[in-house]
Length: 332
Image 1 (cartoon, rainbow, N blue to C red):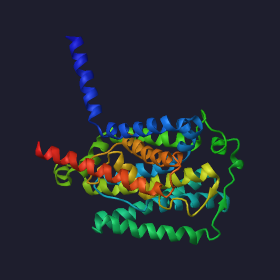
Image 2 (tube, one colour):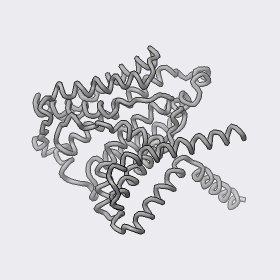
Image 3 (cartoon, rainbow, N blue to C red):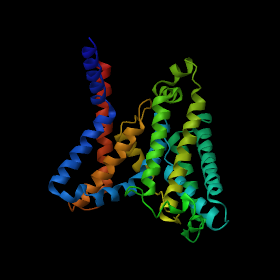
Image 4 (cartoon, helix red, strand yellow):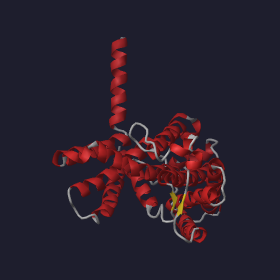
């Protein structure tokens, strides 16, 4: 009996995995890797792998933040500019004002949190369309970056902290992988636990699935939606700080256009635009798929302008696939 029970459990686990959004993005991801590697063996070389996951973490962290708002049925398109603002603020606080690195980071994240609160108030409290509200924030943050850093670039010197871990972050890779990769891993593990293993995470998804039912069950939907915008902005700020530490510079243009690639990664990774669905693992796989598909274009020697088309193609395919699945469920 125990053997039969174990077999049934394994079959159920396998069926659950195969029907998951993570599996649906894993299949095309592996297909792209295998096909490209078959024609271009160096595609999955250690050098190319490290190169990919030197850049992917920045978008992945922003995408993770964006997924919180998407899961509640909203969207935030200001994340890229918020990341840029967070990055240059921490650089200014350390290099110009001489603040300790931890104080600079906290202040930078507090400013980003305030931006998230403003977005939340406009969308949740004042019922301003989320696209319009966050577009306004995007433009404001974009302008503020250049107002506070008119010269364009500011170097950040972390050598003053050479006796602390912060001073070695950008110069000493761990197990061959750069700092930003490990920062991403830690952040995603925490997010996975929060979303998948806590009551709060289940309530967040419930808010996006059906707000009226969620409210009737005692969930504070308004508060959850507000918090999702704050988390989104704070994670954008974290991305900016990670970028600044990784490259030792504050640069206003950092983050430009990242929000759309992040949203594409979310959608491809199974985060529903209607809310109620999504996971950090799916977000990571979705962002990886977008970047690896773009990287494959370069390896095949195709025009680099096609890279932007990749985002649109994979995002459209993901949305159409999700729509087809939803229609099948309704018919069933």
